Length: 213
Image 1 (cartoon, rainbow, N blue to C red):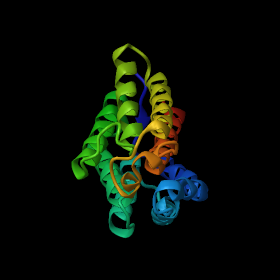
Image 2 (cartoon, rainbow, N blue to C red):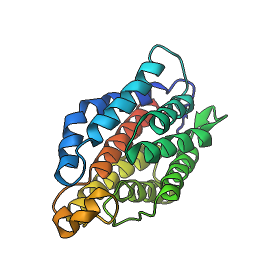
Image 3 (cartoon, rainbow, N blue to C red):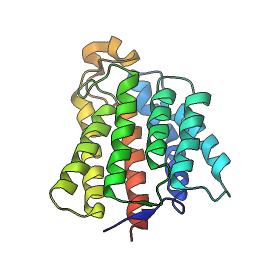
C-alpha cells in the first residue's frame, strides 16, 4: 500500500507557498476583473509569512499545514484568509499523530478541510467560489480509490477534477461576495479563489505523489 511520511513531508507546504507567491500577479489580475483585485497579494503575503516561519526547520507535513493555517487565519484580511486558514488547520488536525499518510488518511484530511470551508460560509458548488474546485476534487479522489486505483492515480484524478472545477467557474454567475453584486457581468471570468485552490491542490498532490513509497 502506498503511503508517505508525515515527518519528512513538511517541504510540500513550502513548495505550495512558492507557487502561490509566484502566481501573485496572476491571481490579483483575475480577482481585479470581478473582485477587489487583492487576492494574489493577500495570498502571497500569508503563504510567504508562513514559509518564512517554516524555512530551515524540520517540521512535519501536519505541523507545516497548521502553521500555514494559523498564519492565514490571524494575519490575512479579506474573505480568503479565514477560509483557507480553516481548511489548512482542519487538514493538520486530521493528520495529528499519523506517522504514515495513506489514501484513507489523505481522504479524511480533504474531507475535514472541505467541511471546514463549508462551515464558514453559505457557499455551495455552483456559486463561483473555491468550493467549485475543492468539492469535485475530493469526490474524484474518493471515486478513484473506490474503483481500485492507486493512491498516485487518485492524486492525478484529484488534480484533473480540480482544474475542471476551476474552469467551470468561467461560465458561472457569482452568488457570494463582492462579485455577486455584478450579477450576469461576473460570467466569463475565472473565480480567483477557485483558481488559487487549484494551484494549492495541484502542489499538494504533486508533493504527496513524489514522496509515495
